[in-house]
Length: 160
Picture 1 (cartoon, one colour):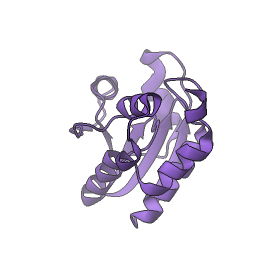
Picture 2: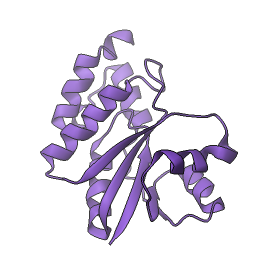
Picture 3: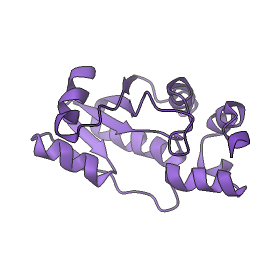
């Protein structure tokens, strides 16, 4: 079976990401989870550190009994023309890219990579979850339980 690359910022990792990984594992024997914008943290768009995001992924995978996944950090290079090659240099070999981001899909497709577009689940996006946190609306039900603990311990909410 194939090796998949699942790339995202995971700001934060949410329940739809976990469902996506489960789906990918039905089609591929191995999944490389690439955490993008790895060097960015403590901003409104990228509030969580790389280590916090790695821990979110690790805990969510453990809680869902999803073994055999590899997590890779992908720092931004701010150059879309070179970005796919940058990702390929940092990751082990993969056969197919899974993404819900149309722009990411188009960048890989331009480099002739196999891409499977994931349908986004309404109500689940890092942006909407961060907005709910900012507004004081309930958000905990949108992320795995232990991910909510990481978020609460990150201090992100006190910065709002």
